[in-house]
Length: 300
Image (cartoon, rainbow, N blue to C red; front, side):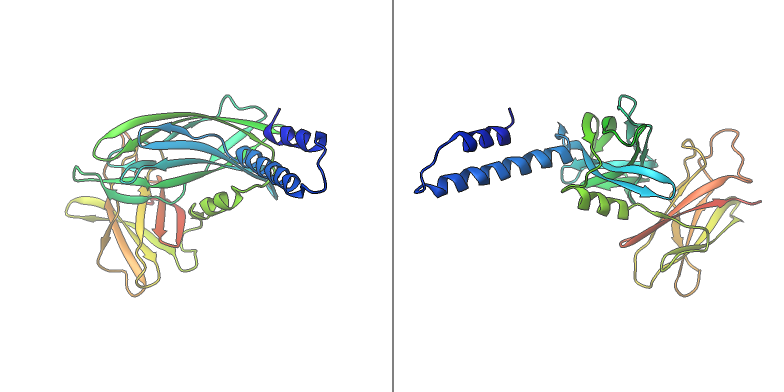
């Protein structure tokens, strides 16, 4: 029997004198607290704790759009101060998180969204890309049968790093009823950190204006012009068409004109046999209050 049901039974079966209203009020308050605790537990799984980190699942509300119905959820990783984990493309060093939802029930698909990360020095002369502190990966869950609850089971693998890196794993389970709860605000905030998909040249305030190839000092490189408000710091990240492309971090370069930041990166780190002509790159521009993602085709 749950705590809330036990308290209700005690209240219903107890005969109280009129002179003891405080006792009844106390039991009612305990029932409310127990119900709130149960509801909170249904919004999130227990933390799976490891060394310097912990992970949990979060449940949100059901949503409908022109593309169909989906359930809002999230996977949260909490890191000790000074420790980090990695983005889908970790940069010069690091291992991206892996997500396995194969053991879920009444789940047709689970799409992981990636909040905007931060590049940082990796301690070996290169750059890594990832997250510090607390990060929530929003999940879009499509049920096999939207009229029934879904049971989400996530097997998570990730790296927890400071001066050294530790492998971490978590096995998480949570029922998704489609009812919004106390975690909804956290999930909405996490979704707001996911870069917006926009076309080349589009965007308000933050935009990737142009991309072209050139040869400098015998090396072929890519030049990217990014529009951003004056005084706002901007990072640019570059990914290849497949995970085995290891493009360097774009670096700021003079030029671009007023209101435009120019970035350049060499076309290095290509897998053996890869062709540059016609390859599709993903460029992500990240500012403190906004981030965008643009797909560009590298023309000859």
